[in-house]
Amino acid sequence: MRIAYLILAHAHPQQLARLLARLQAPQVRCYLHIDANTPSAVHAEIVAAADRVASPDRVRFIARRPCRWGGYSLVAATLDLLHAARADGFDWAILLSGQDYPLVSHAALCERLATPGVAGWIDLHSAAEFDVGYRWQRWHPEGLHGSLAGKCWQRLQRAAQACGWQRRLPHPLQEIRAGSQWWMLSSAAVDTVLAQCVHYPAVPAFFRHTLVPDEMMFQTLLWHSPLREQLSGDPLRLIDWTPGAWSPRTLGLDDLPQLRRSAALFARKFAPDGLLAAALDEQLGIDLTVCKPRP
View 1 (cartoon, rainbow, N blue to C red):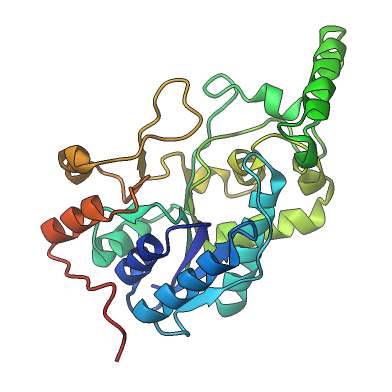
View 2 (cartoon, one colour):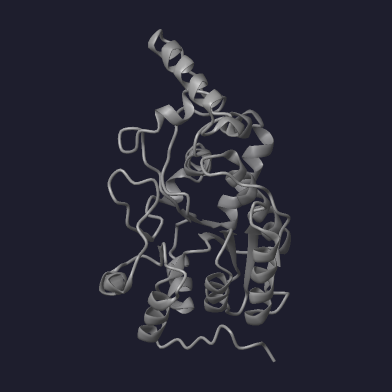
């Protein structure tokens, strides 16, 4: 089974190297996007660390974009990763962050991916389950995120909404589906997403001015595709969200029993110290020596 790991990262060279080492297996390639906001020295460390654990034909760094939380730049970087992997060919594409880590062996992962009739594992929450109306019913230019001008712009739009105005979904979208940014998609599902972006350019243009589109666009495109009935709404990720938090809790050694019991294939987010990752590998009988140079 050909697997393409698409990795979005911005820091922690040694942690990323451990992840790359752990993912190495026959017919596996890793595609990395390193945020252009990452300092050049850190980027150089990441490239050097990756070279220590994997051969160049197994790891490919793509052109860097400056990324901003909540912005379309993260969607654009993900699409860049998909195009790069598609050029080489794969059966499954798995989106990870640099602070993710697998909970199962490569063989167990492949067995799960081979489940008949499933074209993807991706969160597909409805508005009743995950209300993200504020993210798309108003304009959210990425360049204004967090600025005084952006806050004033949002106040004006809230006032307009109170009078009955809101943005409308472009054709062919009927509703928004949303959920975790992290997914596993078959080649057929990826082809569908990329084709829809070409056939309906108004859709990516619409999401370009939404808030956190990386948690909406892929879900919504696949929901409006012929593959809808072949999608599992379980992304098979263990992520611990503290109520009201803007980012998931960092997992520690105390979480090891929960991770081992979990039916998920990946978890996040892991601390850069590598202690939890090492404990998981030990229980799985996996021995990694990340810092040892390749022969």
